[in-house]
Length: 281
Image (cartoon, rainbow, N blue to C red; front, side, top):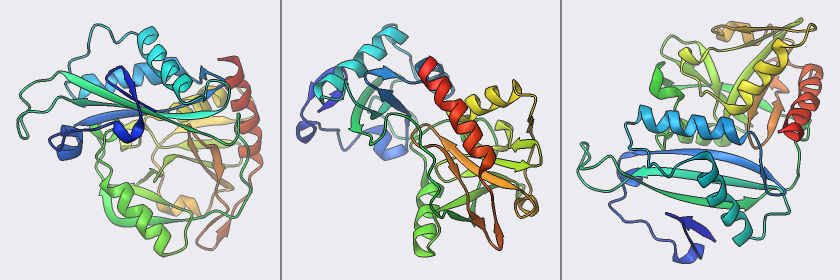
């Protein structure tokens, strides 16, 4: 079942126009949300990021788009898919109404939401071999738009194809200054000693929800020092650990980059603290 503009319909009957601006121009923003037994994890963070993304894209935010209204829309979707008592992944997409070419005829919006089951209620550490490489065919331009979750994901698609063709689990993306900014599907953290480093949002990385939680957690711990600074490719092989974060998998440790193999002790420690955060929400 799918939520299309507030109506729950069978997914086989959910239809988007061939003139849909999200399809034709990538004129769309979205949030991927994790739910556990009907509870939307870090919902407030998702809501405010969605509102910020819509403002940046100059979309008209309906007066009805309160946190309570959108949460209920998602709850109705979970119930329609019998997912209110199990872990689930929700994608909530907002797109500008059709009309116009590059210049839209209206800034009014429509939306669609889908829900799918997840195997585990909380974040588990995946300690299977996980090798990454730099994707250097294309660069992400640093700036405000790079931090918005839009449908413009050509670099991520091409990088994923490159990774699959070369037997890598993931690839790391570079900005126009050749700084490492993130992975194909999440934010990047580098550990050296007791320093945990992650690229600043101004470098072009996504303002990830779990990125924000890890920053928040580590800043409260005396055992680590959190630094938001640009990461050079040369730093990767000198690191003790690398890990990737996103809202679905939580924390994914990197096993290998080129000739360097990494530990995962800090990733394990932070994952347990992240699960505590998720339970407290």
